[in-house]
Image (cartoon, rainbow over all chains, first blue to last red; front, side, top):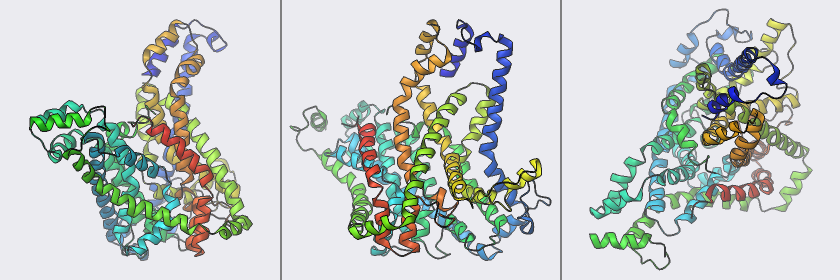
Length: 303
Length: 295
């Protein structure tokens, strides 16, 4: 919107400065040209690593060292090798994909449950010390995950959860929940309290208020945060590789890390795995994109 | 029931201290239990344990005597200083670019968020192979198209760290561009109208209308991004693994190297603890900025 008004402004601004001495049509051409060149640069920058991933994934294993812009003999056999688990590194591919899915869904469920209850208690029931809880949550959100990895590993070992999918699930839920509470609280402020009051007059209990009023109205924020938690868990590498040790328990990112243990990693297979693993989250992200943008920027513009 | 509603209304009333305890407050406390449980089991306990592990002053002395650690501190400073500021400066420019209403730019903006939508591990690994100086596509293309011998991207320590910064920026630029676009959209169009009537140039409009309106957001973003960049483990670990010769570590990867590759847990924790002098003030300022409006 701002840009549109800036554009409108341009037409009528009194001309001053060197740029304004250039004739109008020439200026337009120069400007469009500049925008186009910048567009091409942005496009190449954005696409190149993803293009490279796709290209290597359709290059035969024996040609993977050619470093070509386009493979001489493109093939889909790498995908077949991955999907039928026909390689040493891919013996457990489907199980690992299942592990990734399990951790992602369980994390999402825990985060939505815990954070929606907490945000409801804080912002709707005005729980005592709610602001203390909410500020400690914000504090947790600001601790870099990588910095707590070492003690977290030891604590999980004390809890007897090491090398289980629950360990990773709890880790991810722990780090996603504070942000979820924060976003839910921001979003909850936009829902009028009169709705709660009306339900109370009709005799709604706090739990009915949560289930019948709060949750339905929070749907957009729930979608954004559910996706956020799901993707966070699906994408996690560090905690997964610390907490899950063997192949049967690994998630896909850890399994991709295993590929690097040899000097001549089968890069074509690695990239085919990468594409298969990247498609679901990318598709999910794009399908809920409008919720994501509004959800993520909910508090940002006010800050 | 009506009496109940009245009581609730009283509880929400301004004089909170005087408000009596109601069933709603009991429910409020009960519904907080799941989060408080998670918080104590998985935040308080590990963090407390970490502080306890890092209590030995001797680990810090050994750390300061380790040249790898000193190198890591410089690397971290460069990673933060360049990574964060370059990323946000580019995001500031690109947010203006993507505010344009041209249809093809709107299409481009959909592609532009791909790095953010795609998981980071596959793309970092893709970078790693693409930047391989002997067999990678980048140097292959440089040779095929321009007959240039490409540089040793991940073998030369300086280039390797720069590559890691580039990978980091590639991944997070779309996110910050979206945030700054949201900030720009929130500026009332009247401001630009008024500036137009006063005959302001485009640079003046940025300096006197746009910037004052998004400066706060830009500063908050910089602080938040500094914390997140400090915790960026993947961009280094999966691209260079800290190599060559442990010359490209940052604090996050060095901690893991000590703790799990060298089996020195307290050295690992001590490494991370040395980030506290930057981390604590950042967290303090950010809590005030982000949580300030909350009661």
